[in-house]
Length: 281
Image (cartoon, rainbow, N blue to C red):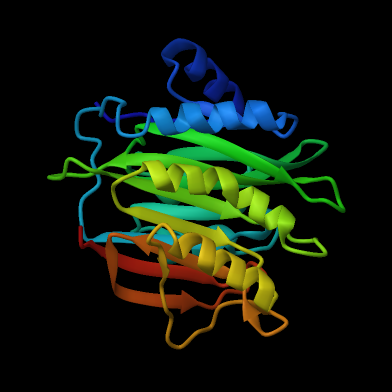
């Protein structure tokens, strides 16, 4: 019997927390103390949750990362299906809940791990990690844009690996954008750095980092390098830019790229990143 894809919505996430005590979420309204508690709870469960039968990723691993611009432009589903239909992990930013992203793989299970960000009326968007195999756990974190007051989200999922005792930590990030300095971006990275310090296995951190200045890029590079993450290179580098700097990145630890590419699209204001990864740990 085919496994039914599971949409991990905020409501279901809360239910899972109550039943299993394993998944932690940090909503926008949390205090610093509540956020720290959520981060500690998430870190405590890394590598401890049971793995469902047959739900293990294998290498080489095809991944993609794409800011989909709220699924608002014609052709986005065709592009996602064409260029990410063969991936095991797809990191989508500005994913709209009304869009049925499961259609990317209509004949196979596709798990959707959603972390809510911007909401306006019936429109709910955030980051969504699509995976061909069920994650063992998920944590959500948000950070408010200081000027607009709207949240930017991060979804953290953990995945079992076939033939390896270690697990893969996958982080899907949409970084805060409209800031005068870098402090809000630094604060948004804090819970992610805590998880990186606790996790001993390979890591993929992908998304729209909004690195439109030297200061923002330097902050991200330095913060992630401290935990062993390095950015993947792209040649030719056709990534979407602002003020001459690429906005989208894929950082990895314990993994090497067998192939990388940037796919120009017209269905979003961001081009799509793709990579084929091999384990090195």
